[in-house]
Image (cartoon, rainbow, N blue to C red):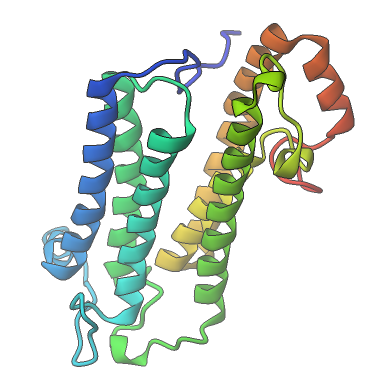
Length: 256
């Protein structure tokens, strides 16, 4: 069986072109998702495919011209872009080659666009046909937004904690297992899975959320975690093996 493929570079360094591409493409995604909602691009696409789309503007639209439900959808896209841009600029030590920048950005835009379109499609949307009736107390909507926030904070805090540890000279060449990483060796991957699932739930309910959660959980369990485990074993040796003995979970505590 072939070794699982690593989707990110483990080489430390900088790539000005790759970084610029990533920042620009992730920022453009936030604009795209807003335009799909506000400018009617998404509704037009759904109509061309023979579907029925939901109105995104009402007499109660806020400053950005969208009903609160769709303003939330736009905010989730913006939040994902801001988080990933901040990670690359201020947290990550790894280079971002141009090809990887395009691939990772396209992957995120694909999932974000799917969420946006499903939130507009009358069959799957969490919004009713008449968006004035959207309830702020909707439980599934609250679960989706809650998972998104928890996942985002988990991923971001874990990565900042690890970066702070590695920034201290006395920790050079040492693996990090403190903070949130004391709960699961790949807690940042678990956080990503949570916010992706929450984003999907907010867009199209629990069924789509379960599909997305299952996809990322499987990908990380079968590819992402083994790849990083191999890398850390080769780099840190016994120190990494002791961490795995002490921390029994890989993605999310008490789950996996």
